Length: 317
Image 1 (spheres, rainbow, N blue to C red):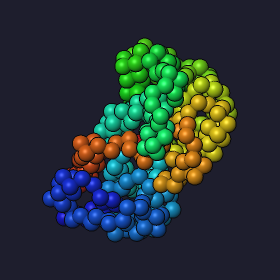
Image 2 (cartoon, rainbow, N blue to C red):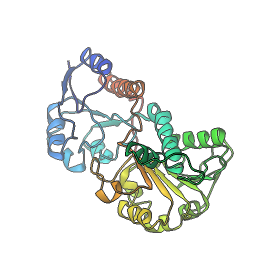
Image 3 (cartoon, rainbow, N blue to C red):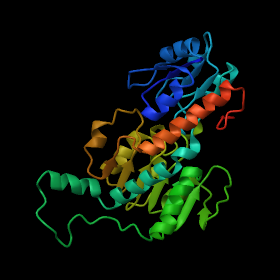
Image 4 (tube, rainbow, N blue to C red):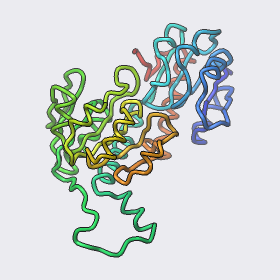
């Protein structure tokens, strides 16, 4: 049996399926692999099922390589240098389809929570400070009919757009680096700043890393309406976190909803102190059936590699 490293605990059904096929080592730690630990894993295991935060940077691939496949648990893989892996003869896959609807649902959760000040309202009640219903108490942003702007119109972006369009009658604009045809009445705009200025609610769904690092900078945020709501369900590094904090502190924008952060699990004290932001602990795919589907997809990629077949979700770039 080939040796398989699973870098963090997965649902029991996936662990049982993996153990039936491979000699499995399950790391007990909850933190991701350091680059040195990733290099050692590449040397010691035939296959690895990595997760967000594992340090498979280019430096991890410079030593002895035994591993033949990294079957990433998750759609995002900015923690893996795919080019370095390929150069070292290591195949890489991810789990794109399994996460789409769950992540889009969290996007809608954040849109509604940030617009309607749900987090702030719950804190008020829990603190025993609510004095009863009042006509002008905690007035937020009405969501139905507002224009949503999607940054990155891939699978998740389109899933968010459909929910907004058909569930809340929201006109949809989107920015994509290349022309993108979609099967819904949505309009692509020419520039990111154009999108930021025209939409009432911005939702970021682009992949993390590479040219998308810092894509949402101070200038992009400055282009938003003062009544605008900003939502990030992509990766934390896509946003200049300091610029976002400053925009929220100055009430340059009305509010934000965040499921991801630049240096997870660190969330800056200045961000946590703000009332006009909803912050979640990276809940995008946190539903048992979704995590099981992700794990099975990753495992299927490893089985395909073991059998000499093409990886169903193998990455090409």
